[in-house]
Length: 199
Image (cartoon, rainbow, N blue to C red; front, side, top):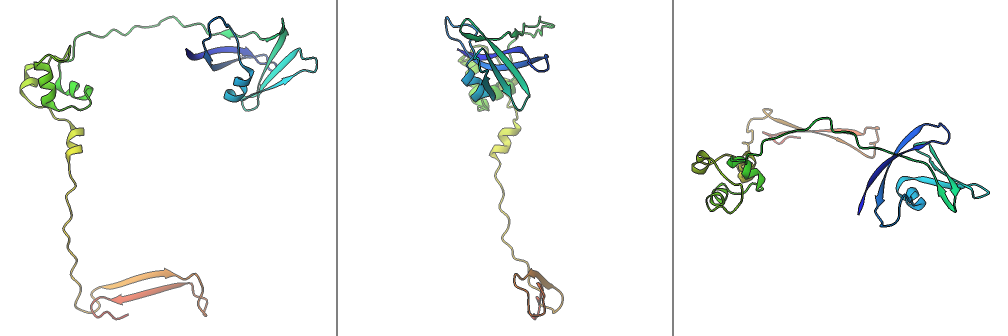
C-alpha cells in the first residue's frame, strides 16, 4: 500500500517548524523508516555527513530547509511531529431519495439514448432507475447531444463578378524585397486595375 504522510521537522538553522509531505510505502514490520535516496531523488534533499559520521544533514536548496539526523544505535534518527487529524466541524446530510429525472440519468449513463433509458426503467434492468410519468412519456433535450449531431452546412461556391469598367476596382499588393534595389528600396507596391487589367 502507498500513501502520503505529512509531518513537521525543525529546521536546524531557523529553529522553526517546517511541514513536509512525502509519499510512503507500507511495509509490514518496518516502522518510521525514511529512505535518504528517495528524499534526494523525489524531493531534492542533498545529504552531507559529518567527518565523525555522527550527524547527517539534509538540505533543500530551493526551499532553504536544513534537516539534521543524529546517530543513535547505529541508525540516523530525527524527531518529527505527525499532523493529527482535525475533528469534524460540520456534517453534510443529503436526502437518500433516488433520482427520478430522465435528464439526470441521461448524463449519468454517458449521454445514452433517451429510449434506451426508458426501456431500462420499464424492464427494471437498473436498480434505482425510476422515472416520473412525464419523463416516461416525453423526451428531454440535451444541448451536448444536439451539438454533436449538428452538421456544418456547406457554403455556396460563388465567385464574385469581375469589374468591367476601368478604375471601379483596383487591386493592390504590398511586398518586401530581401535584396534592396539599386536605388536602395526594399518595399514595392503593385497595382492592377481589375476592369482593364492595366498594371
